[in-house]
Length: 113
Ligand code: HEC
Image (cartoon, rainbow, N blue to C red):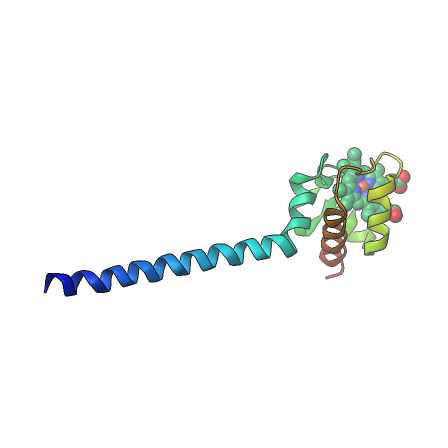
């Protein structure tokens, strides 16, 4: 009787562990696709874009560069300025191609809503 009471509990615990791991993996996948650009924008790029630019989706209110919600740049325009810099904006030589692509995709989609 004692064993019967324990077994379902163990099964439930294992099921919960499996569910928790699945959730964690889904979180990693979402991070890799959509969240990378936003994270670079708000904190990971050096210096972060949010310091100088306004972008509502990222809760950014920087006023040194143009307001990106109004500019609505397309991905090519964003990649060009990230690689070459412009005026007071530095070129981001340290970003990988993947990071530049993620930023271009994030900013263009966040501002074309
Ligand atoms: C030090 C402040 C600063 C930072 C940090 C910064 N920018 Fe800029 N950005 C500017 C300024 C200033 C301009 C306008 C330059 C000009 O018109 O001479 C600009 C222009 C732009 C433009 C418009 C380019 C065009 O073709 O008109 C885009 C898009 C842009 N920035 C995106 C970004 C992104 C994405 C990041 C982060 C990786 C970033 N900026 C970081 C200051 C900054």
